[in-house]
Image 1 (cartoon, rainbow, N blue to C red):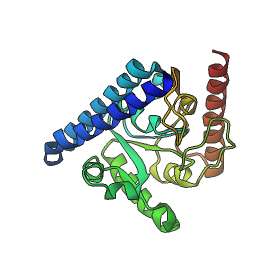
Image 2 (cartoon, helix red, strand yellow; image 1 turned 90 degrees about the vertical axis):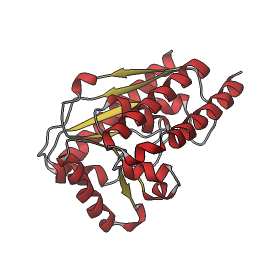
Image 3 (cartoon, one colour; image 1 turned 180 degrees about the horizontal axis):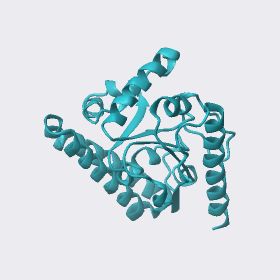
Image 4 (tube, rainbow, N blue to C red; image 1 turned 180 degrees about the vertical axis):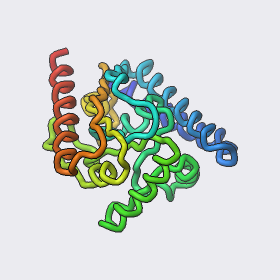
Length: 239
């Protein structure tokens, strides 16, 4: 039954995405804010489909830790789920994503419309400089930059592997950073089509104030994300 529901959900999930891209294509020519609100509506619909079809709910903790205005949001990356589920929780989200995604017809065009930050991960220091330049532009517009510091998805319980991107942004932007942990990889495993019933928990941690030395920030970020994610993983195993 789980396999059947997962297959049905995956079909509807991608049909819903195609519907958004095609029917919403006129948004490419309207204000960016309209397109962002449509994106958040798509994400909300996808979260609802996951709950109705697969029995996979969503719980959000720590919303009180998100200050108003521009900030950096950095968290655990275990699945595709968090890349869309977090969007409705922020006022004007700006995702850091792989540059290759912008080459996909319609999807990539919308990525440009949303003014997401595309990163060429193999370009080294040059890519970091371009990312910071773009991030400063979006922070000046009052947006929330969302980055997954490990870059690629990690299975629940895997040893962390943090890249320098989040710390570089923190040092350049002079805004608070809100870490988040989650347990999404239990219910939406990476590289698998199964969607398991249960409750995915996303937890925002207290904001890290701007201006800390980079090494101290990196340590505080990793401790916050890993402590939260490990605790949520243990909590899920008990249920």
